[in-house]
Image 1 (spheres, rainbow, N blue to C red):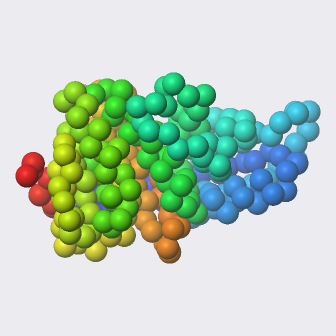
Image 2 (cartoon, rainbow, N blue to C red):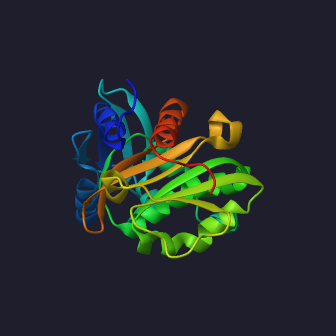
Amino acid sequence: MTIDRLQDALERIERKRKRLEVYTDDDELAAELRTQFSTRNVDVVRRQLTGFDQGFAVIRDADEVFRGAIGLNRFDAIRSPEIHPPWSLDATDVDTRDLFDFLENTLFASYDRKRMLAAAREIEERAWRVGEGRLYTGFQREAAFEDQADVYERLGSRGALTVAGFVDDEIASPVENVTVVTPDADEIGTFWFVVFDGGGSDLQTCALLAREKRENTYGGFWTYDPGLVDELLEYLEENYDVSES
């Protein structure tokens, strides 16, 4: 199956059913995680916590095979995220990698813009660290692009990293080191995406794709699957002019 539109990638992930088991005595936290992750892809089930001081979550696939566990305190990275530039994440106490590994290919249902930025930073930090390859991002609208223009201008100056930004608006002025793509396409104004080809390493490939469901509310997924990341890149290059202007 190939991607003929960005929605196809979301629908593919929807078919990979999972169950998120939340072990906690915290009613508010359990309700929040159910709101964030209950989708057609994910069943969120609360379990009573016994014998542990702090809560944790377990993820299982459609066959109920155990796929991983993580402490609920790690969810703070997306519940109340601290937003740092991608080049400074290694110097902070923020470590989101275990959480994003745990939730790979798990659809989230309700993220606001701040949570989306936290997820995007995980990918941008990889691109900054590798310093080469292709980093494509969809900002939806000009205002969102302008908010992140300084970040992407600096990313575009990093080594041999090629950066392109897709916007469903005309841009008033160019951004140094960034190829700005302004196609007349509804999906560019509907989806927020960040796609990095890994700079030649399958271990570094990653992508975030989310659809705006209503203002400031997004549902989507992130993935480290090299095949799916390649398909997203090929789709963007075949359907939009990503050549440097």
